[in-house]
Image (cartoon, rainbow, N blue to C red):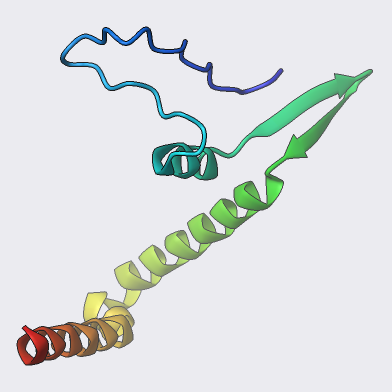
Length: 106
C-alpha cells in the first residue's frame, strides 16, 4: 500500500477565478509543498509487513506526543504555573526583547 498525493494536471491557462494554479517545479511553493509532505510506505512479504520511507518523522512525532502527554499529566498533578514557569519566563523575556528591538529600530 502506498500513500501518495496525486499530481494535478498541467494548467491550460484558462483557470477559473477561484482556483489556484498548481505549483510548478522550481517555484518556492513547490519546494515548500514537497518539503512538508513526508511519506511512509508499507509492503507485505508473506506474513510480515515492512516499513520504508520517512520513519524518522514518525518516530519524532511519537516522541513529541509522549512528551506532551507527560507534560499534561504533570500539569494536572502539580498545576499549570508550577510546571510551566520556565517556559513562561523565557516567553516573556523574548517578548520583551522583540518589543525593545522594534521600538529601538522602528
